[in-house]
Length: 125
Image (cartoon, rainbow, N blue to C red):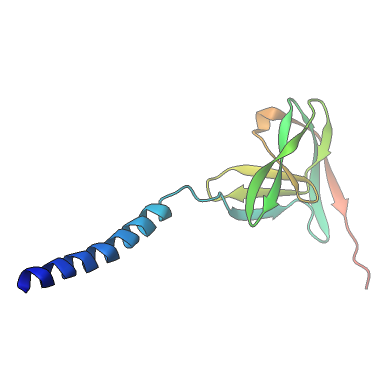
């Protein structure tokens, strides 16, 4: 009787530990690189903004559920863009918003700053 009870207890413990171990292993997978900081380039009022020229083809990313996903299009070498926001992720990667839900990830060596300019915005009251 003691052997049967020990066997049943061992089976019960094993069947509990196995799923917990599986859950533990699943949490060690690579997590998406979520946004840490957003720096607007032209807040309400007076702000600064820059245009830049791309020095090589760069993929465009979309923001999906708080993480960047590579799109199937890219900006072309030699094209000019205006930075709307600078976004830094948890891993330290830097993305620049160039359009609504369109971002590029780039080192400054991939871009040439063309025109730093001041933008004035007025809100209607």
